[in-house]
Image 1 (cartoon, rainbow, N blue to C red):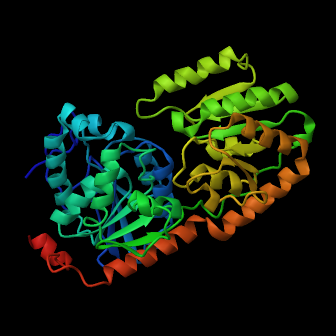
Image 2 (image 1 turned 180 degrees about the vertical axis):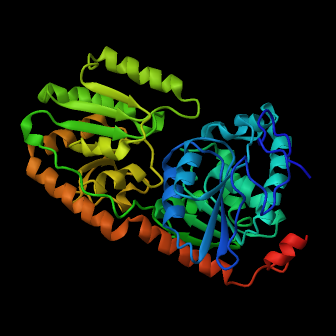
Image 3 (image 1 turned 120 degrees about the horizontal axis):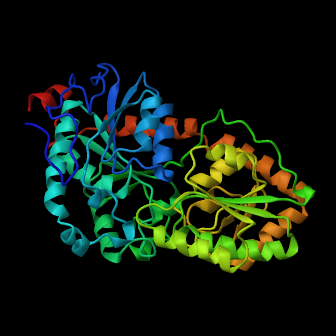
Length: 446
C-alpha cells in the first residue's frame, strides 16, 4: 500500500513506510529494540505554546528508556527544530484546510463545508500504518485535532494512547458542540489523559462539576496534571534598570483576540501619560487566520498616537533574547489561559510578571511575590500594575528573582519529563484491554 493522496498535500516519498524506509527523503527510522517507542503526534508544525512544550519534552526525555518519534501533519519550523535536536521526525501531510482550521470554527457544519470527513478517514488509516510500522508502544497526542485523529488511529492500531490536553475545554474557548463531544470522548478514547494545569483538567468535567477537585479518572481514562517546563540551563537575564526612565515592557505570544494585545495597547497609552519614555513591545505574529485582528491592533496603535512607542516585532525565533531586553513581561489574555508557557519563560529570565488572573496562570504566578495578577480584560488594572512596578524598581527586581527561583524549583522541563515518564510507566505496565495487542511482534505481523 502506498501513501494516500490527502487533498492537495502529499508526502514527497511515494513508497511504503517501514522501519527501514527513508521518510520524506530523510534517513531511515532506526527504532531501539530496548527502549519503549513513544510516537508523538501533532497536527501542526508551527511554533506555538503547545509545540514549544512538545519540543522541550522530547529533548529532555530519557532516551535510554524511551525512544521518541514525532509525526507532524504539516511541514514547518517545528520539524526543523526537532531534527536539529536529533529527534526522529516524520511529516505525514494532512490538508491545510483541516490543519489550519481555527478552534472557534470547529463543528459539524464546518467539517462538511471543507469536505474533510473523507480526508480525515483516509488519514486515520495512514496514521495507523505509521504507528504499526514504527512499532509504537504508546501514542502521545499533543493538540485537540491530534487527540481525535491520533486517538482513533491508535485504537485501530491497538496501541495505547495518551491525550495531552493543552486547551481548556470550555464554551468560552470552543464551540459548545465541540466541548460536549470532546468531554465525552475523554471518557472512552484515551487510556490516559495529561493536562497542563489543574484549571485545564477541571474543564474536562461537565459544567456543573468544573469547580470540583480533579479526580484520578474520567470514565476509562486515567488522569494526571503535569505542568509544562522550560530548560533548566536557561541563564538569568541581565537585570533591567526601571529607574533609568526608559522602561521596556513586553507582551509575548501570537497575535490573537483572546491573547489581549488590544488590552495591552490601551494600558500602554495610559502608562505613557505618566512615563512618556516607556517603550512597549508586542512580540509575535498572527496565526490560523487571525490577520484581521492583527490589522485592527496596528490601527489601534496609530489612532492612539503610539506608533513611536509600541514596536511590533513579528514572528521571532530569538524570543529568549528579546525577553532579556525587557524590564517587565506582561500576559494579557482575556479568557483563562490553559497554562502560560510565556509566563514561565519570563520568570526563568528573572523578569517580574504581570498576568491576568484566570485559567492556569495562578498556578504559576504567586501574586505579590513573583508578579502581579490583574483582572482579565481590564486595561486600567493592567496599567496600574505596570506603573506600580516602574515606580518601585526594587520590588520589580525582587519579584524577578523570586520568579526565577520558583521556576527552577517547580517548572523546569526536567521536572516535566520525569513526571511524564512516570505516567508512561504507569500506563505501559498496566494490563491492556482484551482487544489490545500487547507486543510489537503482534502489531507488525498484523
